Image (cartoon, rainbow, N blue to C red; front, side):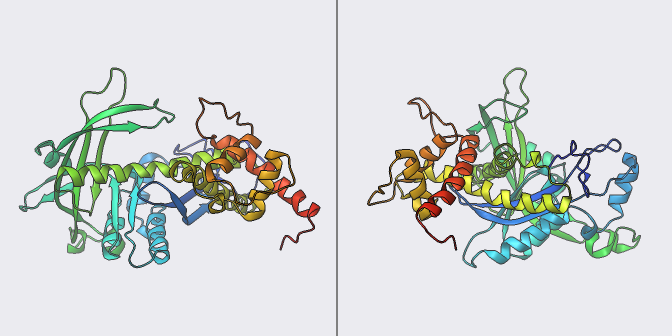
Length: 381
């Protein structure tokens, strides 16, 4: 969270990767639970902290991180989040952790396997690899010698680096072992046998490579590591599609920043900002949930996304009437009305309301709910 322009706010830390001239703000790590269809279910973990600003050259930072245990690194957030999420879900539910290259951590693979949960993580660098025949190589080398299983069309959403487009990618897959040297257990400074490779985790490595990319466009090149099976084209494509659900967390942060406008809040301490971010995170999730419900279940009743008092207030506000209908409106109707409160024009060629319209509409709705309660002499509690 970027609060660099908030010069008088106390307790902020560095959010910059630079070694000098740090931008100030708060770090935020969120874990969003979604179904296979992409429906958000809730936030299983939310961590907000202020990072210490250090003036150190790259070599010094690398040395410091190498000499630190896992518990002393920020990467421990992935392990803690996994434990917290695993404790929340029912025992008969399959838990799959999706992560970008930042989550490519040996200890996460080990812990996920020990908890009997699964992961699909994008590979950060070419790792050592032991194939099923026991041959030692690297992940990239092993995949390059594997035949193409299938070519699929991959829809890429718009982001800051690219426009929305469709990429045609080749999929390859190979299974084997990732050797692990566990600094958390043995410590990084030992010179004896404990510094040597001790553990290994069985994974499937899936290559997703665009051939050829459009001129002037960076090609899609992913290597995904998973402890799920991906032995044939169907299984490999399935894991690629599951990994694409990771983009839902990007939508969450976009909603939190652009829709809920958390970075514009002018509270004077990091503690107050943390509480505000926590509250706005719940609202951001609710907005995402409402939008997805309107797409997946448009004819469901709106009581799935709005409380009784909320949909009644919304109906009276939009229809300019005090008479309530016999049955609640549908999710699609309620979302459209909520967007209209926020400025959505609901023209024939337009789709669902955007996040900004929903956020503005939801704020207006909450004000109207208070007035609705007062006029109807109802108790908030």
